Length: 361
Ligand code: DON
Image (tube, rainbow, N blue to C red; front, side, top):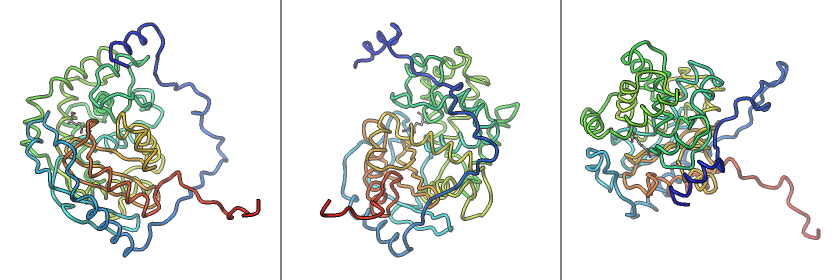
């Protein structure tokens, strides 16, 4: 459907995506219901290292995709960079290729930003104020804000991420920034710093995000000064990480909110599962359905070429390769993650019969 046709349908009341905070299923279960946890383990270290090496070798020679250039500083990334890292919940870490090459986190910051705000405000408040449903539209879609019945999108697209930033604890932009960077650094297990060249480049070309924030404010869905919230969000996107950092951050979400390398708690188990739910719904934007269909794991991509993927109870894995597909997702990263998900038995949706069927039946 063209944008115009969709808009006509929306205006006529034919499409009203929105959230449903009043739904009964969102009530707490009775107090005596115990939440059980059922996951599994990663294979042994040698198998994991072998599969990571295989994924790297297999896709090293794929040269499809384009390096993002809408932020001028990102266009300079060498397209050949390719790294993979994995961190298990026992704290075992491994990487191959350019797994320690620094790059700016970009949209991969969004689930961690959401987790910190969710932890601070509570899962109900953030769902009511940000929304948690897929938009089905590109990450920077202005129309997504316009067509939602209640101006809500989700924290993994730009509109929802800027709104999440605006909700961070703190009276001033600087206090919000400090709160978020400190929390993101705890996810990574080290102090994260901004890439000043990328911040300057983004600030100079940020008209769309600035307009989006003002539009959100017009809908009553931005909870701080729109320009300041956008600037904090932009600086967060420009934090420098490596694939090993992203895998550690993912492993923290896989490990009930405890960083398995530093053994420090970052967020609660409940915040982790809410964050993973949003990653399943919207982590790869309009291709999130394809990703779930192929890979079966919560993940988040970014325009600098990073993808973080979480195997709950097992660990976090991350890929870094700058060339992107049309939706803004790393081409090699998607391929390598699929191979890792299959070969390491990570896909959440796969099962095997408890007993093989009777051949005579
Ligand atoms: O706001 C932006 O446009 C960038 N700082 C981040 C976008 C991004 O990474 C989208 N990901 N695929």
